[in-house]
Image (cartoon, rainbow, N blue to C red; front, side, top):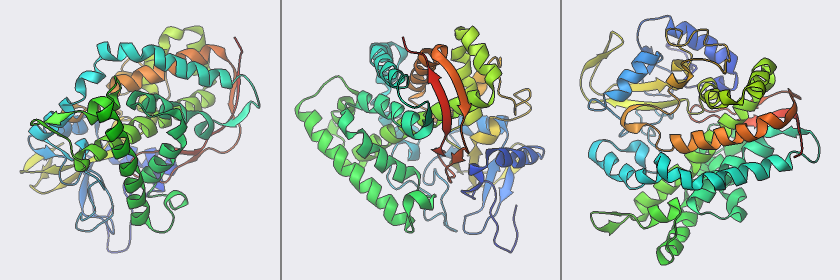
Length: 411
């Protein structure tokens, strides 16, 4: 894992995640060791890779010691100088501040509140599925279906018109694709700032409209939110909108595409779901475990402690490897098998746990379950139709392409 020569581990090499089988084989070998693994890769500050399910849970639940701020995401920089997001949002907050700003929108994500959105979500899913019944059955599912569907889901939730979907998609793709030269180009930092600036200008324009004419969307709730009697300024409002839009789109898009890929590679599991649609809810949990769209978050130790039997010093940096935890052999029987009947699939950590548990998890589950419930009974043919290509990233994974043959029966 370390040495004097230039070296990259599976956690710092953006290309490693583009080979899922190879990545998981190496992660399994690391889990055979006790506790977190020390990583001292060239160009990165040293950190502990937390690879076991129990240890990831432990760190996430001890938020009194392990903080998100000031460096919640792994990026290059020997002194962690770039170890934070380009904008400050919930991901980089802790304790009372985090509870205050999370609480601004938390009621909107309660199951009772989301019931009012179910019909809208069903309508969006139905429209996209109907489009699959005509035209060529050969398509790139990742770029034709899964990239647009959750984008429309979350944009409708925020109150963003469908005419702006492509523009928002372009900016968020650039934001999360900064480790991939085919997306960001040669200048990583310039691409990052360009995306953040464009999104900031867009969301502040939307905020002005929603403050003048409030409605019942999540975007309006956030635009008109107040802390200590004052509306949020651009420094907090823009990052909040970016988080909701980008995280709510890219992660769900990856799970949708990953689910289709998994079912194409495991036709027996597709047959199970078609013969017993009541399994689809559990299948969504297994797909979340299998795909794990968000690969990591970082935590900063504020006092000396132990994790998995390893001594952790104050100031140490820890990488929570959700991708590894979701394949932990001590939790999941035959974790390298895709099984839609898995009894404990919901024990995956794809949404995190503890104070920073994904605020949109209920909405994500509703979107994914609705889509698969409406699509799978009508699938007449699903198979891969070429090479699957995954993005080069260390944070939120996406698909470069997912060529399939997909035949969907018309109503």
